[in-house]
Amino acid sequence: MRLLDPYSLVLMATLIGAVLSSVLFFVRRSFPAEILGLGFWAWGLAVQVLSALVYSLRGVLPEVAVLPLANVLYILGHGLPLLGLQVFFGRQPAWLTLACALAFALVGMLWWLLIEPDYAARVVWMSLPATLINCMALRQVVRYGRGYFASWFLGSLIGLNTVLVAGRGLMALLNGPALIDLNQPGHIQNVYLALTGMIPNMMAVAFLMMSTKRVHVALERRSASDPLTGVLNRRGFGEAYLREAARMRRLPRTLSLLAIDLDFFKKINDMHGHAEGDRVLTEVARMVSSALRESDYVARFGGEEFMVLLPDTDVALAVTVAERIQTLLRSECSSERPACTASIGVAWQNDPSEGMKDLLDRGDQALYRAKANGRDRIETSLDSF
Image (cartoon, rainbow, N blue to C red):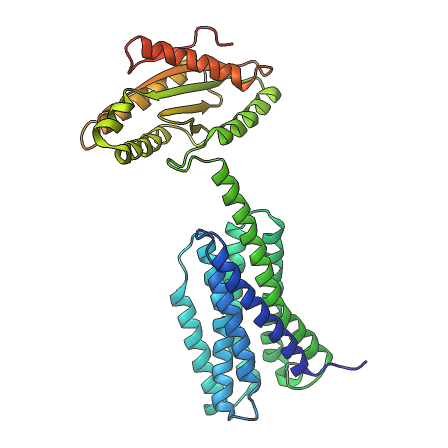
C-alpha cells in the first residue's frame, strides 16, 4: 500500500483550515452580537495554519528558530478555541492557563532541543499542555453543552483528539521515537497526521453548528419576547399556555391568570414623557418577574397591560401573588420613580377542554371590575371554572 507523504497530509489540512478560518471570520460578522466565541475559533484555526507554515520552513531555517515557534503556535492554536468555548457558554476565558501552557511549551522545547536534545522527550513534554487544553475544552462541552447533535459531535471530536495527543505522548514515553517520528512515513504516522490535521477543522465545523443552533434559539426567543421589557409577547404567552394546557390534560391541575393594568399610566407619559413611561414599563416588568416562580410566565400584551400565567396555582395562591406584586409596585414606584399602582384581575381554569380565549376573557372581566371599583385593587373572576 502506497503511503502519503506526511507533508502532503499537513498541506491538505492546512489549506482546509485556512478556508474554514476565513469562513468563521465572515460568519462572525453576520451573526448576532450575543453569539460569542466565533472569533476565538477563527483565530485559533488561523494560528494553526501559521504553525504549519512555520514548521514547513524546517530545513530552510535553523531548527532552533522553527521548532519552538511552531510548537508554541500549535498550543496557542488549540488554546484559543478553548477560550471560545468558555465565552460561548458564558464562562470567564482562562487566559492565565493558556499563558502558562505557552510558557511551559516554550521552556520545554528549548530545553529538550538545546540543553539536552531528545526528540521523544519533546513529544512527551508537548503532549502535556495539549492534553490539558483538550481536557478543559471537553469539560466545557460536557458540563454546559445541551443535548444537541452538534454538542455531542464536538465533544466526541475533542475526546478523540485528547486520546490521540495523550496517546502519542505515552508512546514516546514508553517506546521512544521509533513510532512517533512524524518526519518518517508509516501507517501510524499517516493516521496520526490525517486525524490530528482534520479533527481541528471538524471541531470548528461542529462549533459553527452549535452557534447556528443558538442563533435559531435567539431568533425564536426574540419573536416570542416583547422588545421593550424583555418579557413574553402575545405569541410567547400563547405558546406557554399551550404547553401548560397540554400538561393539564395529562394531569388534573389548576391554572391561574393575573390580568394586570397600570393605573393612570397615561398621566406618566403626559407628565414625564414617553421615554420615562418606557422606563417605568421596563421596571414594572422586572418587578412582576421578581415576584414569580421560575415556572411562571409574564407577558406584556401591549401598552401598560401585563398577563401572568401561574401553573399549579389555585385562586387563593394567585391572589397572594397579586398582592405581592401590588406591594412591590407601591414601594418601588413611589420614591425616585413616578408613582404607579396596578389593578389586577384574577381568573383560573381547571377544565382542560377550555381555551385560552375564555381564560383571558374572564381575567379581563375581573380586571375591568377592579378598575371600576376604584383601581389599585384585586378582583377575582366570578365565573371561573
